[in-house]
Image 1 (cartoon, rainbow, N blue to C red):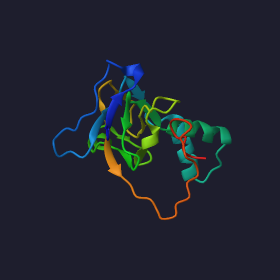
Image 2 (cartoon, helix red, strand yellow; image 1 turned 60 degrees about the vertical axis):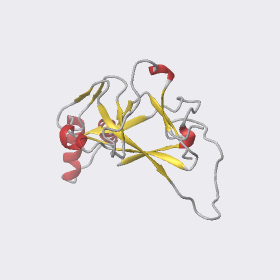
Image 3 (cartoon, rainbow, N blue to C red; image 1 turned 90 degrees about the horizontal axis):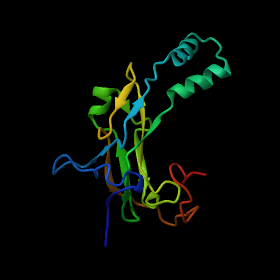
Image 4 (cartoon, rainbow, N blue to C red; image 1 turned 90 degrees about the vertical axis):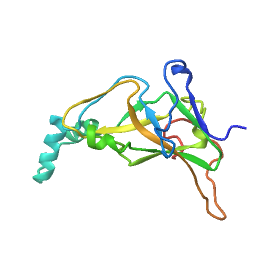
Length: 178
């Protein structure tokens, strides 16, 4: 019986490698980009203008806010892998410790959580994407194979008399929310 591990999604079969731990005592498995990807810097003129207006308590047009939010949004970098695990486990996605320091790249939500029922979902085969924001001053080129995050398998606990709202995942990324 398989308990936990990684597989390559069909789209990337034979094109990428499975994640590995860098050392025997590493908690995380290094997750790499499945393809080349350009991450734009958040410090673009539209965002800076809105930031300046807010700082100086001036009015900001709705159109300017929309444009600034487009610049500030995180990007999803494909890893080409999926993770299987036991029902009472999840895969914790975290920054690599060097990414913010060396490249200005961060996970905007601090961590990511891949639930066990995300594996092989019908929408995207359970492919894991890493959300990243580039807060460095210039655009960053992420090359295929560059390590962009780490995944740590973790158990979790539930409460007594739990009320479950749904019994089955119906989609892919971000689909467990209502």
